[in-house]
Image 1 (cartoon, rainbow, N blue to C red):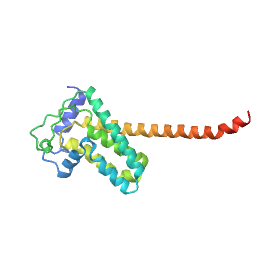
Image 2 (spheres, rainbow, N blue to C red; image 1 turned 180 degrees about the vertical axis):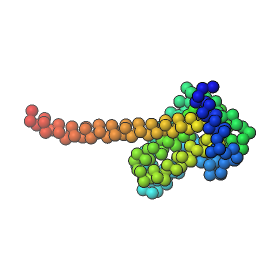
Image 3 (tube, rainbow, N blue to C red; image 1 turned 90 degrees about the vertical axis):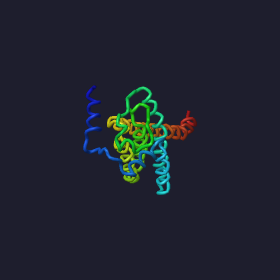
Image 4 (cartoon, rainbow, N blue to C red; image 1 turned 180 degrees about the horizontal axis):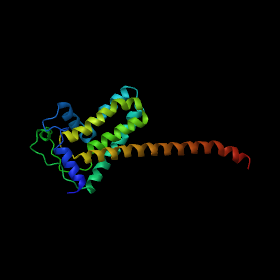
Amino acid sequence: MNGENELDEESLHDSEELPTRRPHPIIIAASLTARGGVLWLPVAGLLVLAGREKAAKRALAAAIFAMPLGHMVSLFVHRRRPQVPAMPARRALPEHPRSSSFPSKHAVTAAAFGTATALVDREAAVFVTPVVLLVAYSRLRTRVHWPTDVLGGLVIGALVALAQAGIGRSARARATACRLAAMVRPVFSDHS
């Protein structure tokens, strides 16, 4: 077993920070509702109701792009899930995923949504970030992922949102350059 697996084993099984008893219902609900990215639809709706439409659109777009990317990565990285079926923390969820443990798709989607929100609207991020962290923690607390699965998922999701922001800026810069060229072209064509 390599060092990474040992670190995961120790932090998941022997940690006093992650109790083995059944998690609080809020933690279970966060894990269940975030499955398939469903949780982020009402969160985006709340952002819209709060007048944060731009943040909602960008965050949903990032999450929608990040989810299949997370699934694609898991096709290439074959990692077993933590083996704790009898633990009350693990029995709290009805799901028994058999897909690769890396990365946590819940964490990928959550981080993409949260990072995109933060890049567009820092005030909205104050409310979204705790939800992102709750979802990530729920995957550890219910023992369906190793810590590095969740950490990797958070990194992948954040990178997706950052890439989306960079692409958006590039597209805006190109559109601005085209508009300027269209305005300047007649001036020079009249004098040639």
